[in-house]
Length: 127
Image (tube, rainbow, N blue to C red; front, side, top):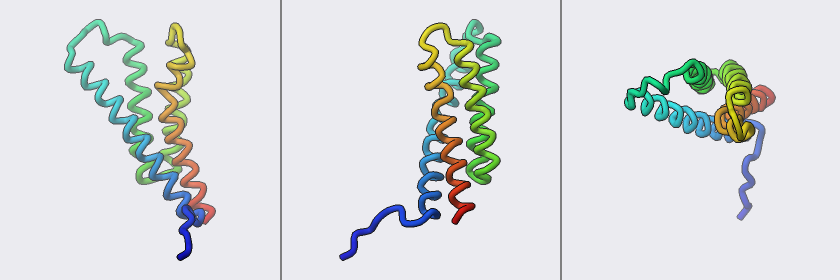
């Protein structure tokens, strides 16, 4: 019996990249949506600042990129990567201490998801 080696071709590598990107992007989007809903339900007026508004816009931009990437990998990866870079810059500027942790938590999953969507698009284009 021949042992199956996985992935066999560039096409299946693209499928694996796309699947992992979808899972990471969806889980990150779900996490941020839960955070936003919890903030709205809490009705805390002091938590709505300019900083939180900027964070909300950048995060929704990244979530939009992940959503677009489900259908159009190239466009979605570009939107997700640019939103992830913008989130990284914002987190670095807004974080008081633990700048690296803030950058990794806020933008890391979106950057990884965007890079995997781009890799999937690239591999499918090559196949």
